[in-house]
Amino acid sequence: MSDDLRQNVLVVDDTPDNLKLMSALLKDLYRVKIANSGAKALSIASSDSPPDLILLDIMMPEMDGYEVCRRLKADRSTRDIPVIFLTAKAETEDEELGLKLGAVDYITKPISPPIVMARVETQLKLKASADFLRDKADYLEAEVARRTRELTAIQDVTILAMASLAETRDSDTGNHIRRTQYYVRVLAERLKDHPRFAATLDDPTIDMLFKSAPLHDIGKVGIPDRILLKPGRFEPAEFEIMKTHTTLGRDAIEHAEKSLGTPVEFLSMAKEIAYAHQEKWDGSGYPLGLSGDDIPISARLMAVADVYDALISRRVYKEGMPHEKAVQIIADGSGCHFDPDIVEVFMAMQDEFKTIAARFADSDGDLDRKRDYLEKAGD
Image 1: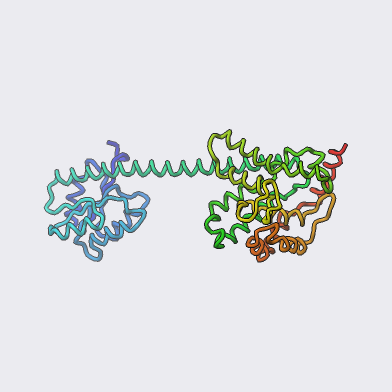
Image 2 (image 1 turned 60 degrees about the horizontal axis):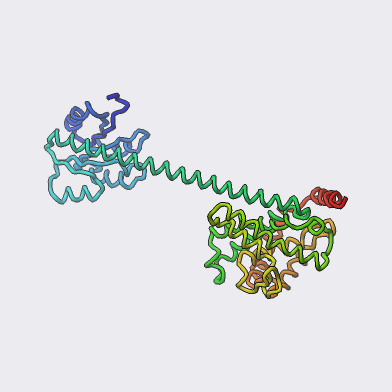
């Protein structure tokens, strides 16, 4: 067998004659390393070329074999190296201690060469099998992580594509999608320890909220241009049509979900937000007139984020409202438009909203492009 393919056996003994004997016994089948102290054994075991098995004497000065074994098993890099004690200590309690410390076998001196060789071979075969299974498990874990990252990227791209579709139809969108996404996340993070929300707003749910939030207005793709692009107040009949964007959004996401043939968590939450973010705490919202806790938490969070951003944002037909005035309107809506506990948290963290708004502010160029878009749409 090629020397490179042979397994490595480390023999640890403070007696030169014992090292010479074991080296001669093992050298035809294995690559043999020797160490005449516990410290040297630990150094070799933790090197870039660790042994596949260690034959370890117990009675050594400075550091005995028991302590060497303890340290090997305590170190993540060496704990899987099998240890066979090879010692003159023949008492039952000595063997029991060695096995309790993690040794795979215990051989007493004077040795029987055939027995030693058989036990070494057995433990090396077991080690090779364990290494194979461990490598396979590591590969599978890495593959699962890779596929998870891939699926996450697909989710993100899907959301981005769908949200961008809505954005192309609505000239007022700008960075609204991005701002509301961050508003919702900071609100949820602040509320996750609140007694009313702790059971729902865990970290995975907040991550899903962040992913799903950009789809809250996806239904606007189904609203006619004459209404969607109208620069001003809607007539009653127009408003009724505009209100259908919640149902259209829910139905579009539901169709995508059914096409996949299985429920998808982030799409389910996106559907929930799209359908219910125009509901009001007192039941005067739409499309179902839900009230109080019947409104999904995700939609209640989006309601605050959406209204705040609409108030402070510039449009081609209006200037953005000052932050302080928008905050006052949100406060006045507590208990009628918005969940009072969410408003209370919003008031306490309003500066974070202001920071997000500044970070993702629409540029003057965005407003000019909106004007051009509206003018062309009106031609």
